[in-house]
Image (cartoon, rainbow, N blue to C red; front, side, top):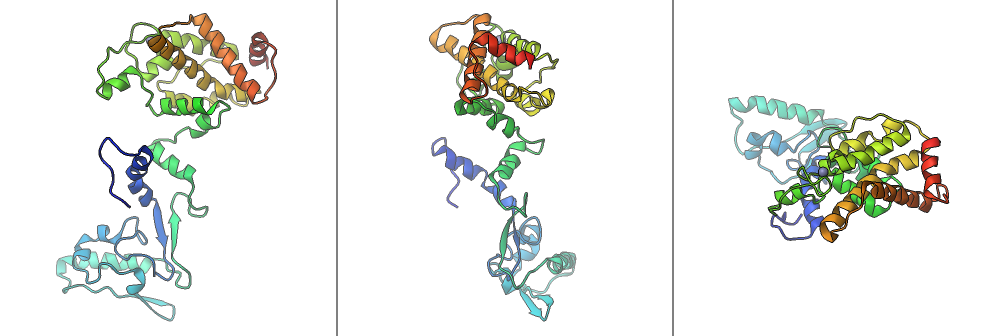
Length: 312
Ligand SMILES: [Zn+2]
């Protein structure tokens, strides 16, 4: 592993991999076979951490700090015998460590006629999966990231990417730019009032709220708007159950947020502005185009499409 880059420059993907390398390693564990490939003190094999971290006082006085597991284990028949040498006699106050250390060693599972194997702890029987690693790094221990509702919706990839960025709290709204040291007056260009944060712009701004309310009225549901984008993707599917228009339903939060984001950018960078009615129309037109593109149903006009959403 090369040096971890710390400066503001460098390749983003490589920096991302480096930043999560430790997390990745913590999810790996060796299954001991003949012990020829596993470093006795450095690798994770009989505990959830390397032995040198679990027993630093013993590691300090170990004669062989570099050896592999096979260097320390002997067999007489099927009986295992561990032989770890230290540079001096073990002192009284170290007896407890030694006893626990030996207990760990003697309880380790060894398949001496097989090769050593590296296991992916989140799914040991299946092996490494990008999906399970992604869940580990994106959940932060509290529920899992709604990757399915974001990436599996039938929307253009650039829109799914936008939704993912928004759910990760990283689109460049004014509050995020301020956090990066770019000083700007943080006001919302849609309602011309409150500061612009992702959650305000996409949900709680009166302008956005009107669009969301339109959808809930169309589908005939009552919904209390969650606070954050990520929560919307987490519970979006569940609030609808098994609706016939599930494909359309799943695309809605993407399409709605995408329209608001486009409108926001047009106002800031191009100085043009749609009315709420025009934006609602844009939303339906875009959604219909996406649904037509995946061959869901062909609609001759917007009214037909809106009827289809509300009636089935
Ligand atoms: Zn606003």
